[in-house]
Image (cartoon, rainbow, N blue to C red):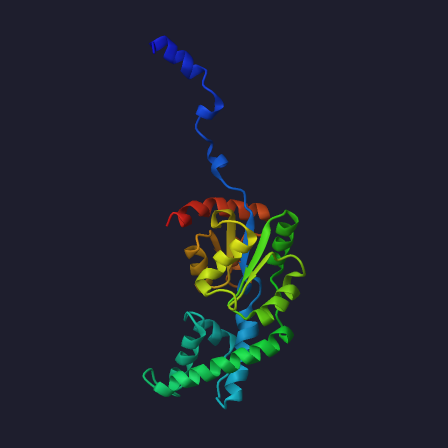
Length: 251
């Protein structure tokens, strides 16, 4: 090709020869997946009273206050929290074989009590997130819920918090292991992690969502103060999704 011909070709190239604008690489948000603990304070309003009732039923003089329970939430699972409390009170030691049996008994009693009492507990949704779910549903964006709880109480509690017919995917402890609950919800919604944004209610849930490739927002507290950074509108979710998607999914 002669130099003059090359110049003409460059001047007349088609639109697909030009670099793609940055905004065009962003994918539209197709789903929001919420940890149930992000929608409401299930831990302190549900699990904590159930544990206190379990302690009492077994004759243990233990009653967790909200501050003490929040302190224990730094431990990754409830068995460790119970074991730590028993050691702190001198009821057992770290090497005590009987401690494992007592922890099992406490956690089993708590789970039974929780299933019987949680629907009557004083659990209120975070209005900001309920409004966001309503807006997303109206916009045709899929809504999923994941939970570490049993379906027998998670399903009716979800209806109580957000209403009927809004949630397109509900994945509980009965449906998938913790690390697979976000992917399972995405599968039910028919979307990929690149198309969704997760709202986690704990650091454990946040880790699970990020491991599943989802851009993730941690909802911690009552959405005042630091929690004010939580997106409250679909447009905000889209911006958060666009800025967080690339770094997290590349890991």
